[in-house]
Length: 206
Image 1 (cartoon, helix red, strand yellow):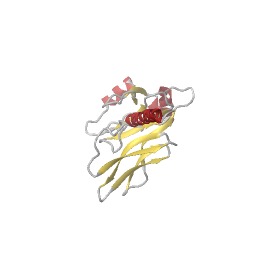
Image 2 (cartoon, rainbow, N blue to C red; image 1 turned 90 degrees about the horizontal axis):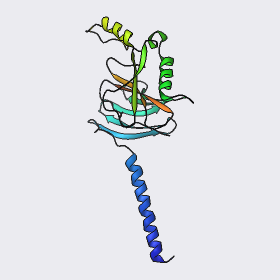
Image 3 (cartoon, rainbow, N blue to C red; image 1 turned 60 degrees about the horizontal axis):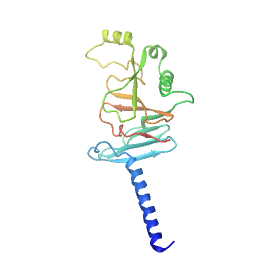
Image 4 (cartoon, rainbow, N blue to C red; image 1 turned 60 degrees about the vertical axis):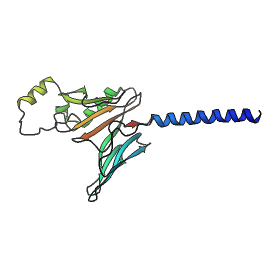
């Protein structure tokens, strides 16, 4: 192979490498919104848990906030607070189980039977749902919802009707089935306000 041919081959190989690298970078989602004042986005990855997330690190002077991985979860940590608070939990789908069956199993494991028997799995459709992602919550069945409505006090925030792993009357939380055919589901606690992690770009590693 002469020098001119080697030069052409090298140029093509380099172009292909750059194209593949650029394509890989393009697949990595950027944060879906700007950070709030005094905060910056940082990408956090834990291959043991199997999660990639964008989260904000904040310095308000009197308080610093950051995120870290704890157990099976992405957790928020306050400099003037206690232990990290898990906000995004990564949960296993068992062999032979569908995502829907896994969510029902997890809900039953974590909820009093008298409550779980009156709640049903339902799509969670509030807000913008990323392409390919499915979100669900556990809500009161028709009879239970009617009973709750009849005894509701308009001056009080009621308790979560389906326990701590169902819908919240004063906040947002849901199960999330990531895009693709993975073997994980997420339980995402957004809270009342826009969260300091990016709920729109959570990614489960294969």
